[in-house]
Image (spheres, rainbow, N blue to C red):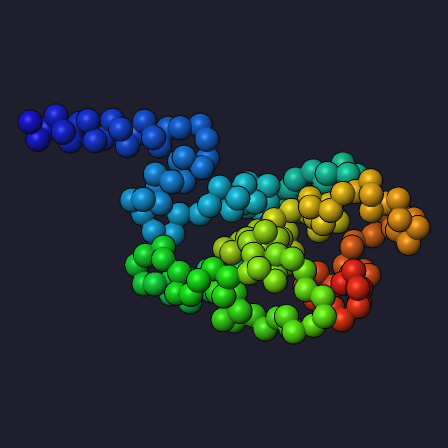
Length: 181
């Protein structure tokens, strides 16, 4: 009987692990193991190619993909964010990043995700192929949430499509409307 239960358990574990959706695979693995990278982190690592060359999105040129790791993660200091030997966070997610990162949220205008403690909307917690641990390419990044067509209609954005938004805007907070610098 024990052998049957063990065989059935192994079969079910393999069935769930073999799922083609990254989220279900992550759910199963993180149930059994601590520190399993999220599907987003795995995708960023794959895009970086672990240091191999990758094609640029817009210009087709070859770029060297560099995977950058968050300091505590790179130092294997998991307890900086997680309760030892668990995936449980040491603080609620909306407060965790403020433990180490000083953000001025007392300014007049605060970017929505930052104001709600949603740092993970823009940043990956363990590592990324993009600077500042962003979830995507910095040049196109803001346009995941902000409508590109509506933004480019604005007179002040004419000719700005080749610039990063952070040239004029602060990504976190400002005392000037529209998070202007």
